[in-house]
Image (tube, rainbow, N blue to C red; front, side, top):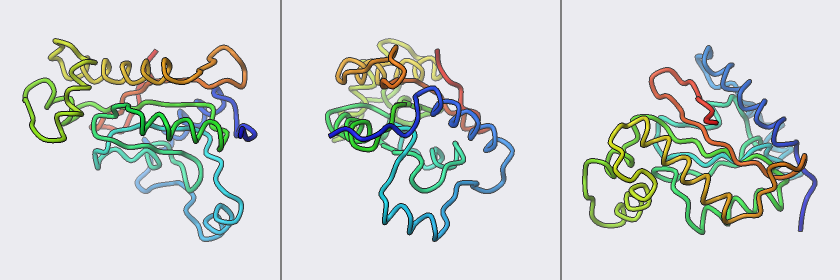
Length: 190
């Protein structure tokens, strides 16, 4: 079942960039979380304009970073913003059933999961995450470069696993970004 698209990938990307620009000078979250909006989205459903895959880090809050409110972003969070079948299923749901056309993989600098993949050999379930990051970064030890490589690896997994039609006006588009913890700036990767 396909639903009507919320907006094109290009329009969604512009909304994200504009939202981050507002966030950089804000002291409080600017997204609409009002009771009328909660009631409206409860009655009429959600129509997020973008799908965001981000790290679970408590300092990385996509709705705030992009000045978004209830129903605007479909956010999938996992330590190290790694991708597996669960995330792909969530992306597929948002694209097919909610009409989202933009998929943004957003890592961040000073990521603990990336650091663990570079400098440690964790045990337990964390190893599933760091092993995936290790595949993405190889022998890279520079934090910034490793974080970017990790984002690009997740982007590639999404692109290869889903039917992404980047050239079509209403097709899905996958983008990458790096959130800078120190100042809140989102760097969109080319």
